[in-house]
Length: 257
Image (cartoon, rainbow, N blue to C red; front, side, top):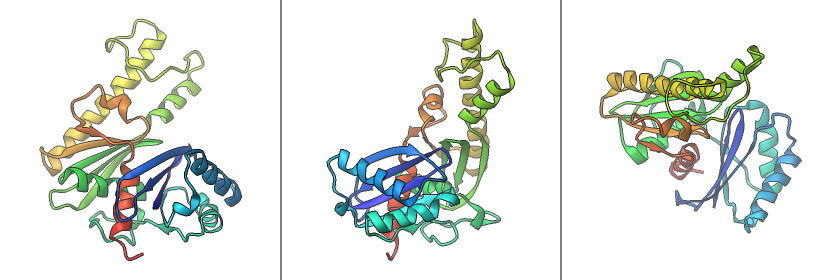
């Protein structure tokens, strides 16, 4: 089986796939810790496997997308020591499964590109991938199937944390939308501004991107907070929380490793 690992700024997602681009069998999510040692990561990964009734020997290959370089060395060592596999890192500069036509392809985040690969395969092109994570990202795939660029905005959690930090009387709130856009107390006012505000941001950027690459572009949302926005707008066609992991699996299946 293929173990795909998506290392994000806040969370690290692990997915186990049947080999050869087969279906996703199991997923796990842990906090991204930049100073986690190889032993800590290896023991944790083994514990996740065994708690799910799986043996580490089932892993025949490891593919990694990482936007946290500080974690790469210890993660690689953990895969070699505890799973006896040499991990393969996915990067825009070395992959050939999708053409990248941005000004500086080497600067492109691997998670953005992996999500685009999966979206193109599942939904065709043109397509737009909206990632609701630490940052909110909008990746665009042209009608010709090229990754042509992206828009990056502060994420929902970052925005909430910044707001609460700089306004002493405002509380932390659950990310639930109130009945309407006009809050009747402090909590519902915050919820209205946050949820409907990010809905508006998503609709505006999706509309502008569709105008640029095709009004028929399919839009797929991913990331831990995708449902928060997607349930309140018709601009998003599908939600797939494991899109980046699926893109990694597709890349590995097409690679010579």
